[in-house]
Image 1 (cartoon, one colour):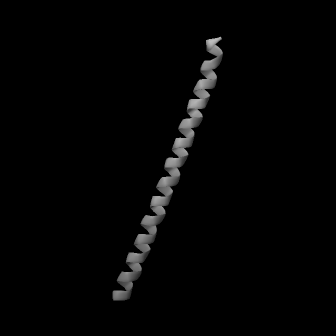
Image 2: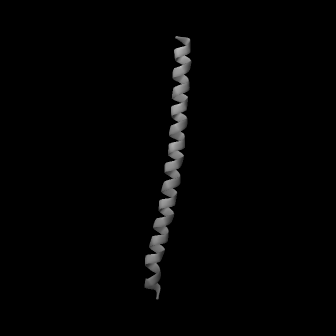
Image 3: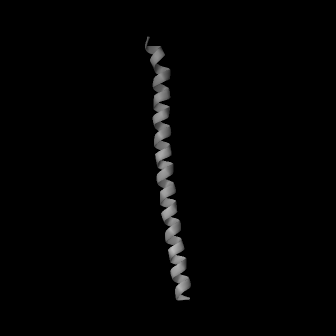
Length: 50
């Protein structure tokens, strides 16, 4: 039973570790998309300045 508990805790820790990595990845992707949106908005706005 003790070993089962240890294994369960380790796998849960592993899962939360993976989840944290996934969250960081998603955050990074969102930041990149926002940057692209800003660049697109600027590209659209620039012709209007002329």
